Figure 1 (cartoon, rainbow, N blue to C red):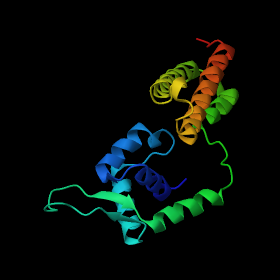
Figure 2 (figure 1 turned 90 degrees about the vertical axis):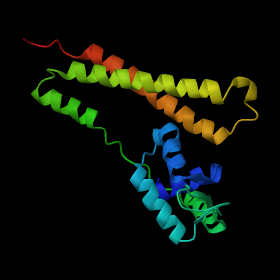
Figure 3 (figure 1 turned 180 degrees about the vertical axis):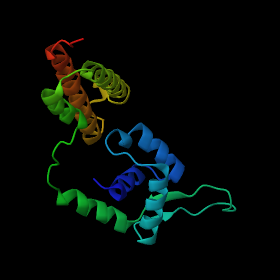
Amino acid sequence: MSLPHAILTALLEKPSSGLELTRRFDKSIGFFWSATHQQIYRELGRLETSGLIRALPQAGPVRGQKKEYEVLPAGRAELARWTADGGEPKAVREPLLLRLRAAAAVGATGLDAELTRHLAVHRAQLADYQEIERRDFPAEKAADENRLQHAVLRAGIGLENFWVEWLTETLATLPPERP
């Protein structure tokens, strides 16, 4: 995924200012595609210059007011084109897995603390995702929900479940540390 397409997606869901986009990235899209405040503002400028988005007209004086952006038809067409194009799956590049491979060669001293830290992070993320699912996708509204957004959330839940299970198993198989 590219940042311009993430921004187009977010703006199609709801016209927003750069600050609002940053907050939304922190709370939703950022779970799987992160961007800094500066990256978002820089990309908004590029998207506006290329005619894919526009700043909504302001009712009063513009000075000091935040610009809200909306997607133009060309932006919607670009997002539809990009969605249909697809792409190759990316190989996993997880530094923790490389650390385990290195530990097999040099010893696992201290690795249990790192695995335990990762386990805590993944358990917390899993709890966050499950709370979002409980709050935003209750069973009684299953027919009304946005199924694709829920599918993205379920992917996150599945990945976090994987990491929690794998880290728990891996911690149990670590050799005892030598003094």
